[in-house]
Length: 107
Image (cartoon, rainbow, N blue to C red; front, side, top):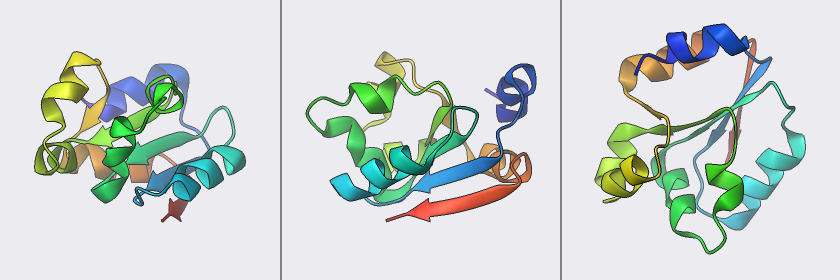
């Protein structure tokens, strides 16, 4: 799936939030500071949020993306496919970065 195709119809948000930490605070802080039109990319250990109890906030985010290589590295790629989550490869990562004016990292 091409990230550019996904973002164009809805319009790019102002900020891309990178959730790289698996701790609860990383996600909570991200959600507290994100706006409706922003995008969130779970990468590195951040993909482990799929395993947390009550992961509905992660799955239900309209503009949430997951780094496919990190899902695979943590053994979560099959789960992400079952949940029909939007996954991005390396090119998709750069497309997301380029389509947002600002980028914040949450650890």
